[in-house]
View (cartoon, rainbow, N blue to C red):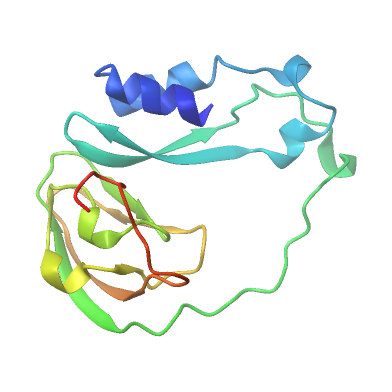
Length: 162
């Protein structure tokens, strides 16, 4: 599903078209019972002609839900506080479309239509809980907090800038 979005983006498709293509790849008969209940969305950062964008494929398996009693159902865990930001930046979306950036993305390499101090963002990611994202509406400015990328601090290739 994620590969289909990325391939469609490389082929020049728009975001909505790439998401629709991804919804046709698998159906409930292609996976084990209960998988459609667990995999309700697929998020993937894809590089489109106008920059990287977050594609969210909702209902990627076209139904097949078994309801509350599905095997492998996920129960919500405790909420974690946002990490304390090391750097705060003002970000302006100069694009005519919304741009979202996920928690793990090397912010320095975010969509080129986001205007911010890229040097200050080098080696940093959004100071938001893992798995979440921040959406920047067209023409909007917002202040975001950034924290250093963890682990070995290696962030190679997201947008081909590093």
